[in-house]
Length: 190
Image (cartoon, rainbow, N blue to C red; front, side, top):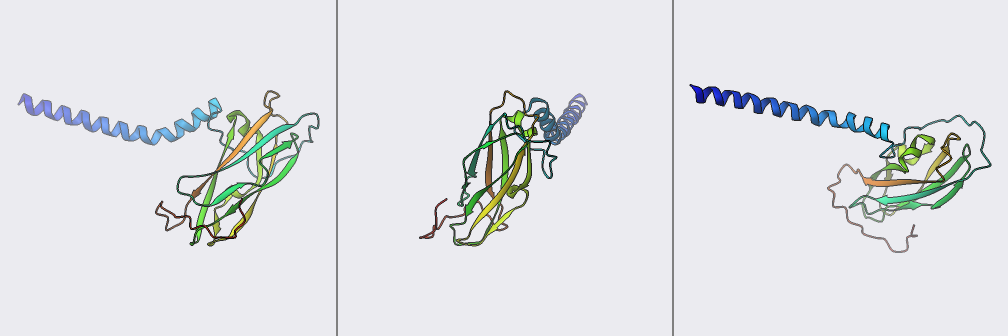
């Protein structure tokens, strides 16, 4: 009788521990978001869409470095048209990223942005960004993807340089994660 009772208690404890671990797994995403918001880590951009221009701070310039990265297995050629911009806070700045699909198949991609230092993310307003939508390119096709942004005039004086990085992911419906880059000859490199 004692063995059966001990086994039942053990089973109840194991089930309770499993339920708690499962619940903790679901709670990690909102907890991570709160942690990032409090610490300024992760560089998530939350300011998107139209921005109120409060005037340009011509007494100050911020260097904005643009970086394009392909996720593992993403064969596209992808990068910024200009890798370094000098921007006055409050100024609307337009640039573009270039992408080309060197494969023999149609592909769909999604760009995920990140800002460094993370503290600067809340002061970077993306008005129009190719990252808002997925990008579809036919085999051998290339495209110029626009980016229109503004740095808020409230950007702390201690921040003189911002890095805006985009990682390009293959989200093609038939993506098996092993896309091959059959490069076409004569294409213009990016």
